[in-house]
Length: 347
Image 1 (cartoon, helix red, strand yellow):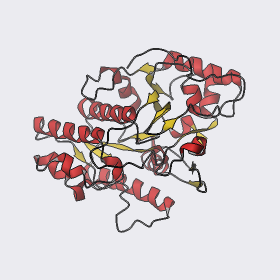
Image 2 (cartoon, helix red, strand yellow; image 1 turned 135 degrees about the horizontal axis):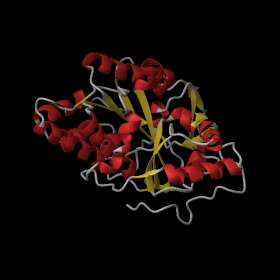
Image 3 (tube, one colour; image 1 turned 30 degrees about the horizontal axis):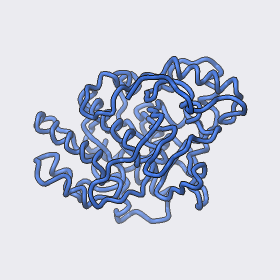
């Protein structure tokens, strides 16, 4: 990974309105990003976390920090999530991880973390497809290693968060799923009092009150997200981070985003990989861009490569959805565990 500035093909911010704002506003936003973006220097999950120190000022005394991703198929966004989990646990005292989409108790992962019982690779073989990756396995092994060193102060899973196999989940009820996700996180916090890292998809973690999820071939769905419910419950104690990207493969080719997507401006300046505090002081044109309604990539379980622009989050603004953004210019596919087939994205 390098900290170089945007290069050729990163996306031009000129010639038309971007994200519903003028060229001048978009150019001002790109210049501001170039000045304020903090480089993230490695994709090695075991490397020192010094480059993540600005995250402490963003998180502050939050009780729940959401690491929302626009696709679960990206190696880079997955290992950045791992590094942020490490930083939040090691430096800021977080002790619960809500890993969205399956039940760690059912799988036996909670027992593995506490005692080392079982083989984590074999345990993950029984998980839903987007957990069956080398990146998730690496995170689970790191959590167990942390617990061996801190037997009296262990990190643990926050229980089932958004598991569609739960008996009270009604298929075809997306608003009900958002409510259940939020209730799972709130219940875990109230039960333990431990600060929680929630790793999930931006369709759920973004502060959307409401927001719209669009997936090619399906009718758009608009309702209040779990992140919106958590912001209402915790106030500033809920911090929403959005992990976005410009182009790459995951595992299908992902072209540069349309001009009116937020990623076009995010990719027009700044390092190749960076952390950006959207609450930082900014001049009026930049605040106009941050607060303007926009669209972002959202690669869900039914992604159609032939209609990339048809998959997106809309109905809100970048600064409304997220307190900060982690941005990677280019992504590559996750490393699948044997016999795993992923179909999940950022939903």
